[in-house]
Length: 337
Image (spheres, rainbow, N blue to C red):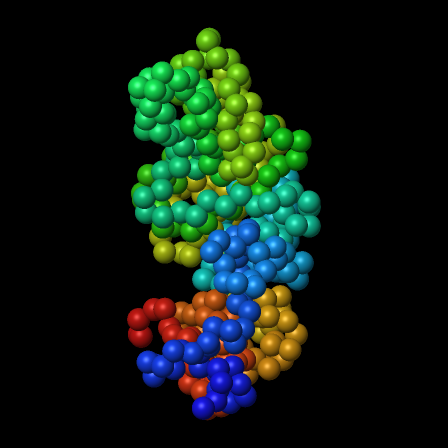
């Protein structure tokens, strides 16, 4: 029987019900699915617990991203005017990559990422106060006759938007991802914060006379001191709001943003994405899949993630599995017209 991973046999799980050590032959994960969890917990004998794994391909994408002239103009307009940049386009058009490219080239540090879902509220982006944990700790301390572990600041953590509005010498980059998935109120709720560049934390403002300075945790995992319960930016953050075009936004939000519409990526852009994630060889071998992806995308809604999955996986599969796998992985995301 052919061993897993051997030439002509890419199957790790075979469905035979016979145990085997196929995981030993599993190749390294794709860069965008490679995580750094620190030292291994409960590792197998002989496993290396000190090896650090890559976080993904954001840096490679940022280095290799080559924006169009329109992208350059709109990004710089947003930088000059200190306005949010609303970027719309189909999945995989490069909306999120643009945020990482700007942060990397201008040396603005880690991109603060706020992924939006239907339940997201403005406070989720600004800060979180864990009142239940504070109450529990107070009760435990009272019952045990000990001192509570910390003040109110121990139970407050700034969200990505709140962290972006901290007074820093250089602006932070904030990616508000897929704003069109929010409920109807969030875009309007963002207006005042985006205009004023500040917000208050009521739980701290009520204590301002007694505790004018409180140390809280940021989205970066560091501690900062807030004064009188307010956060006010010094350099307005570079904010990218992304949308897949699934809904319209209210005019008050649109007039406060610089709008950039990204078209579908062309062959050169897709090839660059593949090279950034998987290397030159994969881009060359998978060029036929890139071409087929472009042809289908003229009439079907497809995502670049699907193309990357197909090229990565078919690299380990031999014909005729390669073509069949690609078709199975790159399925249209919209309903046939």
